Length: 219
Image (cartoon, rainbow, N blue to C red; front, side, top):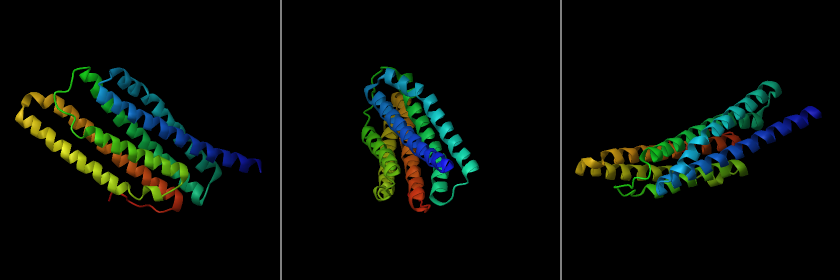
C-alpha cells in the first residue's frame, strides 16, 4: 500500500511539474514578444536569464520519468504519460531556446527604432502563443477535443510566415539599407514558426497520453 501511494504521488508530481514547466515557457514566450514589440532590453535579458531554469525543468522531468519507468515498471496509460512527459519536456525546452533567440536579437538591436514596419508579426506571435496555451491546457484537462484545430492553426502560422517573409524580401530588394534589420526579422518569424511546430508536437503527445493514438496533426 505504501508503494502504491508513493507511485501515485510520483505520477502526480510529474503532472504538476509538466504544468509548471509549461507555464514558465508560456510566460517566457510572452516576455520575448513584449521585448520585441516594445524593444525592451531589460525584459529580453530576463528571458535569457530564464533559460537555465527551463533547462533544469527538462532535466528534472526526464530524470523523474526515467526513474519511475525503471523502478515501477508502469503499464498502459501511466507508461504513456511518462514517455510523453520526456518528449514534451524536450519540446518545451526547445521552445524556450527560440524565445531566447528572439531576446538576443532584441538586445543586439538595443533601443534603435525599427525602420521596417513589423507587418503581421504581432498577429503571428499571438497565434503562436494561443497554440502553445491550447496544447498545454489540453494536457492539464486531458481533453483532446480542444486540440482538433491545431493543424489549422499551424497552417495559419505557416501562411503568416510566408506573407511576412515575402514582404521582408521585397523590402531588402527595394532598399539594401534594410537588409540587416530585415534579416533579424526573418530570424524572428522563423523562431515563431518553429514554436508553432513544437506546440503542435506537444498536442500530439497529449492525444497520445489520453487515448494512446499517435496522430500527426501537421502532416
